[in-house]
Image (tube, rainbow, N blue to C red):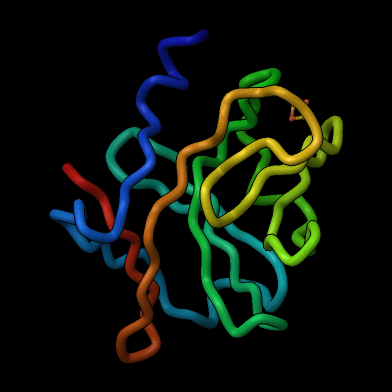
Length: 125
Ligand code: FES
């Protein structure tokens, strides 16, 4: 099970090698998320409309290794945009993946850019 977690590695903007064209912006609910596939990864993409920002992270909750984070509620934790896992409500920063209400390993996060109304996710490979 841990093997699957290792596939997800945070990508910093300066390390992006591939901008993956994920989908049209209208495919993502406002103030909600949707899952996209890149190679064998499932990536949760969030259209944080209230903040006028987009975020991407692994769809895999690190606790029970379920592909659920894209269905999580997004919100704010002391000014940090976060997603709550729908299963046990563990929350993670959408900026750096940190588990904000526990001691789980951080989740992987990925840069997002919007060009011509399409959502692109940055990967290092
Ligand atoms: S499986 Fe996500 S918090 Fe428990």
